[in-house]
Image (cartoon, rainbow over all chains, first blue to last red; front, side, top):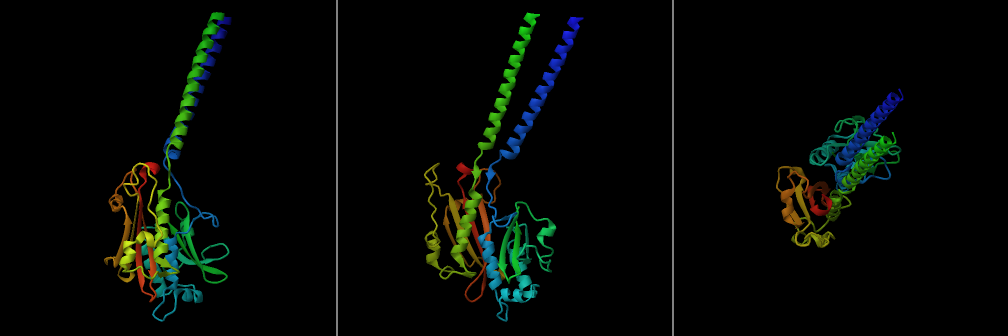
Length: 166
Length: 171
């Protein structure tokens, strides 16, 4: 009888170690898989904007394009900056030009672009517009955060360009 | 019974040693696979190069004077833009240029579809051939667009192409 008892104990102990070994191997396999396929890829460095979370450092060519766009004059000699300061709604001239620059000219560079008015307080777009549709925030944005370029119109509002890249 | 116990203890020791080896080996493998791959800084470098080129051709919303259709600007692009394509002397980088920069100017009103009005480039021209290829060990190519105006208000589309090779240390 005592021998039988010992045997049961030995079988129980062996079973425990087999299970323990399997658990150890599974945990190691998962760790190796994560390290190899997710963390082990060549690491890319991305710049983030310290002033605004979820946005990336401004890109100089895009900002310069926005600046030049605001300085473009219509046939009457009025700059787009003045036009938007008076009325934040795009007219045919500045709306079509914005579309040509930020949607057509930048088509290969950015997956999405949205230009419109935002509140200076929280950068929330005041509304959508006929040329760029609803703001990107409504559509969910892109991976890696937005690239945000802004030009102030007055104390309350700015013109903002949101760009996303894959 | 005592003999059996000693035998069991020996087996357990071998088992523990084997587990220790497996765990240690796995940790070494994971550390190596994480830290063994380099940080790829070439996209940022190519972006900075494009930014510098944009600063060079456009200022305060307008095209800089002496840039468009200026042969001297074209021939001395690096000096005019304050760029230096010198690299460290490793992996034969000195002999084979590691950078390429090209700036193409177009009339915005007839873009796309029109030929460039003016073009300036510097660096290793051969790197352009790798831009449309797919693979891991390839140079990083970046294209940035810039809309700008001349002093008379005429709009221009500028395409900046910047390429950084440096495969050996980044890819």
